[in-house]
Amino acid sequence: MTSAVEVIIGVIVILGLAVIAIRWRAIDLQGAIAGVIISLLAFLAEGFAWLFMIVIFFGVSSAMTKYRYDYKRKLGFAQDKSGTRSWPNSVANGGVAAIASLAELYTHTEIFAVMFLTSVAVALADTLATEVGLLSHSKPRLITHLSKTVEAGTSGGVSLLGGIAAISSAVGLSFLGIAVAVIVGNSLYDLFSAALAVVLGATIGVFVDSVLGATVQGINKCSKCENLTENLTHHGQRTSTVRGLRYVDNNVVNFTSILVGAISSIGLYLLVNAL
Ligand SMILES: [Zn+2]
Image (cartoon, rainbow, N blue to C red):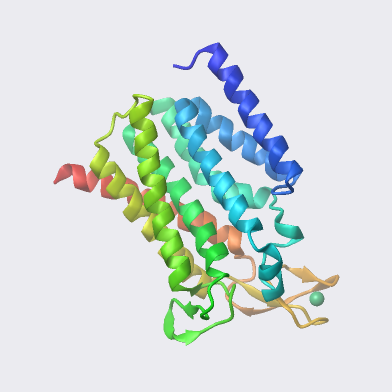
């Protein structure tokens, strides 16, 4: 159990990061508050080891979102508001990690450690697949129709560069998570099967993200400027849906794919250990 001093240090670290994130314009106030709640849950569950994973996710994904932002904006698909993210983004990316943290807090079971690590790995891999994929010189292909190329940034579009970024970040985060667990001495799990479950679960999550992005994710059109958007209104007018489901935006797809990846990793972990 964490001591009072550690709790104070943890809270200072979390609030300090929130202030830095707002100053960087990586996230707005509501997004930061949601991030603080998610980080506190992870910290209460397994201390600095889990908090470190969230710090890695936030640092790497913010840096990659900002990296060559102007170029991505020219493509027309960069994050709105100069890359600043808000609370739906925090909940979409961190909601499953928060659920895993709550479950871990009350049970201290290894399957929730696997679930937590996978949820962070999928969130990071999804973000990197998009942000690194936007830099690819070849046009992405639709995951449900690989012979068809689509514009960079189209949901459901996949690129080799984005895919490599996704899988390598999942592998990296998985091994980092295991290494940290070993260093802090709370490695209750079978390390090999945990790493395998996290990497495979994260891969499933990224795949599901692309498939949902290509099928149910809504693409709406503004009647005034003709731009495609996932917003329900644009230029003060209601947009019309041209593909997918109107209310299924990128955040809904992210949350769902992270949940599927995380639950898959629990199944894989139990399966590998049962063999
Ligand atoms: Zn418009």
